[in-house]
Length: 247
View 1 (cartoon, rainbow, N blue to C red):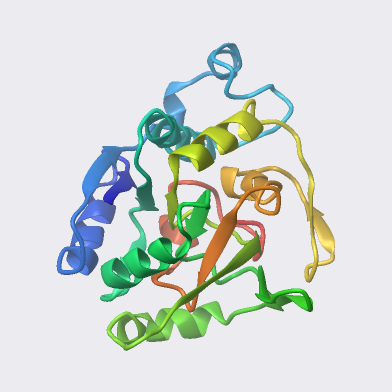
View 2: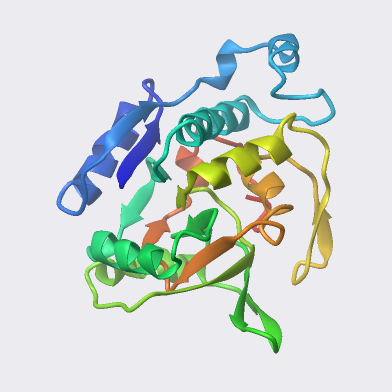
């Protein structure tokens, strides 16, 4: 399974850090990220990407278009692909465990999320037919322990995904890519109610919008995670600093 890492040409230090963290773990191709500064609202609307009812930052625009273009490529192929961003930190067992978990799905799946933002909640079906489970995390502790965690022994399992934030790393199937494209475009106003935070989130980034469709499609999440992100707002190329849980 091919791995594509999204990285902006104007932030080579991020790719250098990605290589330092992950070169011993996996093989990958670098996908040149779309720079959202290069597009006007009129261009985005005429291309069918945005309908003009949402306000994405330039970074969020570039991020969304980067993922969408990779989805288009996967949707036209016969093979799934793993897509990650250049702040991803892969667990040393990622390759073997992700292959094992994907094989267990027997081809009936659209998306598998390998990691998420720890400053928000995760909602998944860890107790099927009984109750959804809502998880909150300590992002500060994760940042402190990340280097030890990715070298540890883990045994991840897949659970039905209901809500998660961030697009740090996921694997998408050709059918999943086509489904998400058909639902996401044009990017538009879609307010998301999030249990646990007890409030709505405006559609300010692609990962927020994707949450509307996780229950509709065959989407899963690995728990414990096989990919981490330090989720550092100070070095983010997607958005300005934000409130926890808004992605």
